[in-house]
Length: 170
Image (cartoon, rainbow, N blue to C red; front, side, top):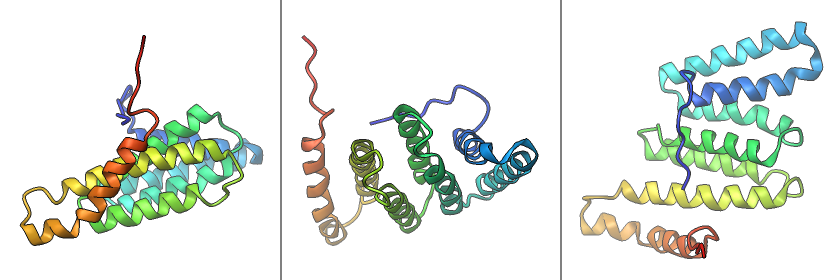
């Protein structure tokens, strides 16, 4: 599992919006790019302040597809880690589910472009989301828990299948 550690005062989500929008608008020239980047950053800031997490994820994903071929795999993995971390800020399981669907649809949109990385992101984030989803059932009655049984089984299977879950260093 990945943990986001803030290394600056800027919110990681806002840093991703700034980074991706600067790359997306770089070809347009400074005069055109600067107002667009400023607008996107202001919109992202408003989403954070207002707690509009779905809108923030949607905004972040808009620029990602444009820059996908321009960034390294490590940068792209980091970008998606930050985007997926925004999902955890939502207090509504339904909103979190919608954000997860939006993220997964964006990742699977062009499967031929960096397919190994797309699969890696999907597997890791799917496991994290399922784990957090199951945590929402903590303390519920037996009937409610039975509804989550299928997802619990899927989470365990994904855990066992994950390539980075069992590592040995000799």
